[in-house]
Structure formats: structure tokens, C-alpha cells
Image (cartoon, helix red, strand yellow):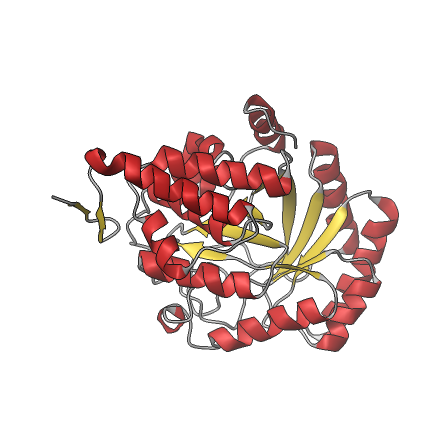
Length: 341
């Protein structure tokens, strides 16, 4: 008889069927390694497996085959905090919620440059300027452009940005300045999006992602798991992301911040998160899959497993409104498991 796992609400096979389960996982891996793609139905079956280690090992094989053994290490700065006009129910920076965070306008150029230098010295390979805007006012956008120019001339580090919704003209300007990658997350599956945001819709986010790609910038676009969505909706999000051909996909795990509508949400099971990361690797074999916000809280020491189960990137040193591991600790961890930062 099958065993029902309440966490996934799927029917898992029993250990007596583990051999056939493992064979299916390896068949899917060979399909991906040969240049094929898994179907949604196959992805559902992968996510429903009880053979977590076979899934992790095969996801790791795909990662190494297409991406080598290097881990992308990124640092970021919350360059403008709070007062965001969007009502995203997971976000501590929304003006709709009182969360007690530090709020401040766009940081001075010198402050951001100093943080970029520290990130480089700590071992980060890229540095992302993140600002809580729907879209920056022209004065702020010009200051951001000036800041990017200064970083590019003074610090040997890749510069990425996340500034909200974009126009083609602004994206082309960022490209001219040498920005490598633009971050604009889809956040959640289209079928779940109205549950987390009402001030804009899923199509608005897809539109900016397409503008970024059309301009020739690399696209960083991911989402958050553990917001009450179903496992199937996590796959729906992954396939939507894959259709945009992103260069990088950050996988965040919800931290229910006090003051937001998601404050009391039950934390996701760490192995559920690991399985999600692994299956996303089958769906997006060549993309940088980056474990991001929430990994220190929810994965703890299992971030080592995540980096051997499909992930090949991390954000280090802290996030927008929450702290994180020290970069030297993360880089030491990467080396301990036989990978390169």
C-alpha cells in the first residue's frame, strides 16, 4: 500500500518500491544530460519520491555536468530600505505593514562603494544593489547609475541590480554602464500570485523579466517557497521561470516576518526544500540555482546538502532586512564539501 506524506499531499512509494523509484530518477537524469527536458508530470513524480538521496545525487550530477564545481558567491546591499508602495504579503519593506525595520532613502555613493570593496575582500564574486521601489524616480535612478560607474571603475567585482519595474530605455542604460545581471523575481506561481500581492500582477513581473532579456542583460529571477503554495505550484513557478531562460534563479525560503500577513506561517520542512531545489535543477539544468534568503534559518547545516543537490550559488553576508552567515564561514563551507567559491 502507498504511504501518504501529509507535507506534500502526494502519494509516496514505500521502501519496497525504492529501486523502481531510483530507476525513474536516473532515467530522468539521463534524459536531461542528453539535452532533453522533463515534463510537468515527470517533475511531479520526481518531487513525490521518497528516495531523497538518489534525487540529490542525480541533481548534483546534472549540476556538475552543465556548471562545473564552482559556486557563485554573491553579496548584496539594501541600498534603499522600506516605504515600498507594493503590498507583497511576505515583504518587511512594504508600506502596508509595520514591521519595525530600519527605513532610509538611497544610500550615498561612497557608502555603497565601501560595501562593494568589503564584499570583494571577503571573497564575493558579485555585488547586487537592491532598492525597495516600484520603479525609481529619475533623480534616484541617475544616482544609481553614477554609483554603478564608480564601482565599476574602483572595484573588480561584477555589478548586479534590483530596482523594481523597468523600461527598455533604463535597462539599456544599465547595460551600457556594465551591469551584468538584473534581478526581478516572479516570487510565486501565477495561480497563487493573487494570494500574495494585489498592487500588481504576475504579468507585470514577467514583462520586466522579458525587457531585461531583450536588452541583452543577464536575468536573475526566482521566487519564495513556503508561502502556503502547493508542491504543484512550486513546479508551476519553476516552469514559468524556465520559459524565461534566466541565467540565475534565487530560491528563497519564507521567513514569516512579524507585522506581515505571513508572520505565523509554519516553516517549510528542510528536506522538502532540498527536494524542491533538486527538482528545479532537473527543470533548469544550466541555470545558476542560488540558495538565498531563509537558508540559514531553515536549512542550517543542510545548506551543504543543498549545494550537492542541485544548487550552485549562495548569497552571503546577509539579506535585505535579515542577517546571514559571514562570508568567510560560507566560503570555508564551500571548500569543505569539495567545491570552489
